[in-house]
Length: 246
Image (tube, rainbow, N blue to C red; front, side):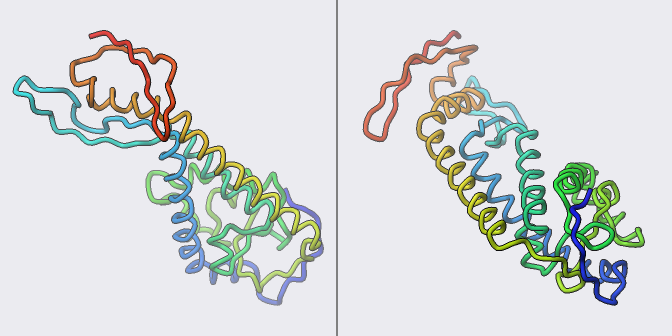
């Protein structure tokens, strides 16, 4: 699960180095969580549908409303995919996420070598289990209890998280690194353009579905089902004919 490359390992034992990295791993987790929260907000704000999370959204006989709360989000598998992709791509390409780079950490195999894609993917798919039952409890317990401070993803993929200065393996050729950075930036920019395009042309029906879920607008009359006609676009506006059944 690793890419060959002759690392230069400092005399510091790798197991000891992983212990010294624990405070930095917490910093990296906080930083990466902030980045992923921003990506979640973009994903939810573009493709999410408003749903009632507690209470009942319905009109009352007096003309008032029941008390309820809502959330605008996509289904959880899409959020999990975004989460795993963020970690796996950055660790597979560069050996570190933005948070790890900020904290001065990198992911290596058990011998201090650069990890490959298989290890990056396995390591971060297992993250879905490491977070259980909440707040990285399983991953945190394993990180503190294991000799080399490995969470479940590390144990399954044969990886370690160590400070940057502990292991020095041959750097990526500058051409390869530049191509990876340019490719990652280009793909990110393309995805943002696609999100912006969808937000303008594809989001209105999702907003209407959210209105139905929360009994807003015409849906306060107890609409059971509806269909949308072809949209009519104006300057910064769109109008959808709605046929509905009570």
